[in-house]
Length: 175
Image (tube, helix red, strand yellow):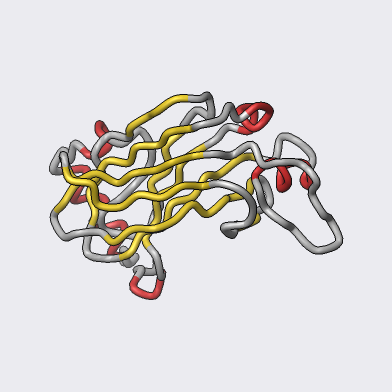
C-alpha cells in the first residue's frame, strides 16, 4: 500500500469539498501548505487589486518575479538589484511600485519599492525582487493593491508576477 502525504490528502479533501479558492485566486495556492500564491500582473502605470486571498497567523513576503527574457545583467539593473560590486548598474530601476494590504476597508500595511536593492532571489529562469512583508491574521482574507507609478518598459515583456509566500518554511510539510 502506498503512503499519501498530508499535502496530497488535504488537497484531495479540499478538491472534494468544492473549495472556491481556485475561483478567487487565478494562480495555484493552498491554505494548507507552503505553495506561494502567484498572480500575473501588469507593469503599466496604474493600480491593480488582487482578489481576496486567505491568510493565517504568520508572516508573508511580497515579491515581483520576472522571467529572464532579456540579458541577465540588464534585467538585474532594470529591476533595481545589484548582482555584485563587479557589475555596477548606471541606470535608474524601472520598478516603482507602491503597495497596500487591505482587510476589507482597514489598511493592514503599506510600503513602496523604489531605488536599488531591497533584496532578491535568482533562479534558473526568473529573478524575484523583494518588496516587503506583512503579518497575516487568522481566518482573514486580505487584498493587495499595487500602484505602479512608472511604466515598466521592457520589464513588461518578462511575464511579471506578484508572489505572496509565507515567511520561514520551517513549519512546511514535506511531500
